[in-house]
Image 1 (cartoon, rainbow, N blue to C red):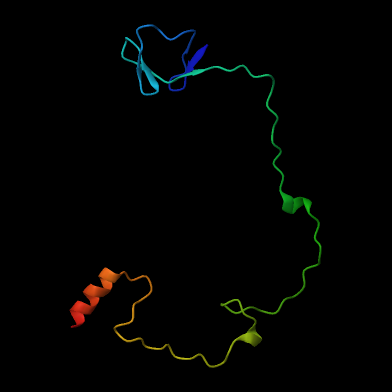
Image 2 (tube, rainbow, N blue to C red):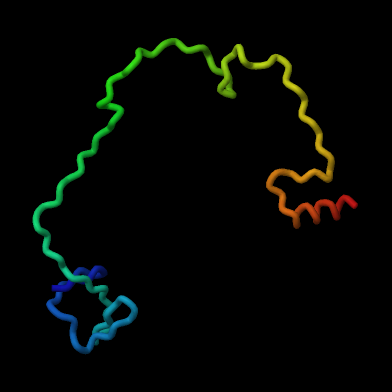
Length: 111
């Protein structure tokens, strides 16, 4: 018993005048079918149980009141008060992610 995965028809045997085109069979009427053998199942498939491990696991510790975090993820006591100014780079320095060809064009415009 064969079943087409495209349209769902079931046939006993492939017709003798069908032409194999890749993995498809072209019948005389011009229709294409992707035929697969039907394999009888031995029984019902077992169902997978969807479980959420977070719901089943008990809390190990009670939540405490943590110190407030700054935008960078550091504690407020770890943040330096003076932030240094960004260092200017010379024109010859290669920016991150710049290809050699892009650098050549950039340096050609400067010169």
